Length: 483
Image (cartoon, rainbow, N blue to C red; front, side):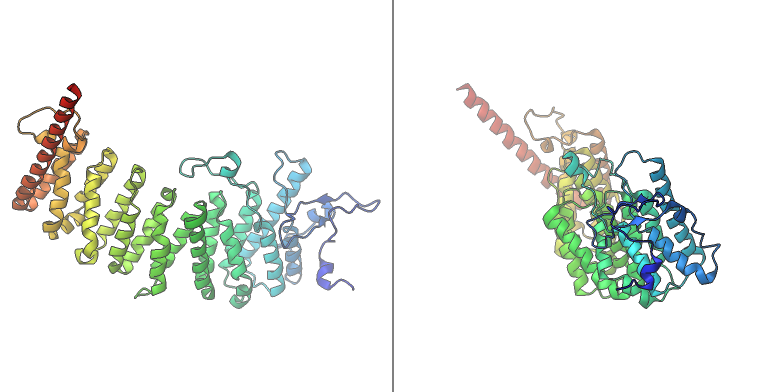
């Protein structure tokens, strides 16, 4: 069978291992990824042909489309960036490809062409040849250890070319000149899945481009919106329940934060299920600190839409509350403060008592930063009004923790701390925490002196009883040791 006109326009596609005929000019090979389904083993013709291509700006409108396709095909060839040092010719070839893609970006930006289907087919082949690739082994697999909170992320070796391909794709996704129905044929489900796979790249520059591009696709192609949400959910499910490792969770949550912000009221049941099955379980993963600001934003966006979701949110976060991780506890306290800023007392219902019991436990934390952060939560004007309106229930809970922090400093007999007593039975060890606690007690006294006197007497009696009981136990053990 003869070659089609389309094939005749291509540079000659030959297997990479074929030998050049005698007398042919020098040719150069460009490595392709053999694992890609769209892989084409090919050899670029003479460098003089590559160098002699005219610019799109200087080409007549009648020939511009044909030249554009030739340049797009040139950019389909994927170079090997694994070598530490390039030969002079390889370096020139790589720069030719980069400058060619930059020219395509400029053409798309300035000329604003309306692409035909033939051109889009070539464009997406070029995009997939460059982007659809196996990601390099993670740093954890290579070195055996990796902490995303502290270690520097790995850089993508092919980024000089990838960056301009992503720039071209971003402009294409926001193009209004090309027929939207034609674009929708190529911005399809399989293409979205390829982009989502690339979110696991360790290079934050690549993830930032992917975040922006996927967000544009979500905004411009309404038919893809349910599928994109389900596909992102699947990424989260795998991360939470299987791998506990993914580099792009923060970027995906940023996309979702914008999506949640646009939810119509009342919130659909499927969106509430997404909150309970995906967002809230994300609090329990190991390195939640990497994406906690974005996660907290998504949760609070749900509260902005529907404050009646507050009990479900609070109970879930309390369920995953850290026991020994002070850094994580600080983040959770900040998130709880944001929740309380957005709800009224009748919204919390049965969740307010366990929530303030947990805040009271944090006030008594031996880690001074946790204790300090919990006290600052009470200093928030909105939360202070919340406590004032529910003081009969909440003040007794908080008063016990506050009195415990200042117990030793308020000992009327002025005795030194008893040896062997628990620290919470002697007052907090940090003087700054004691001062902050005393300031909060003054605020509570101004709020309701009678209630505070009643709580102080009751709580102080309980603490003194525990101290006497412990001292008696110590004396008993001391006498037994002497026998």
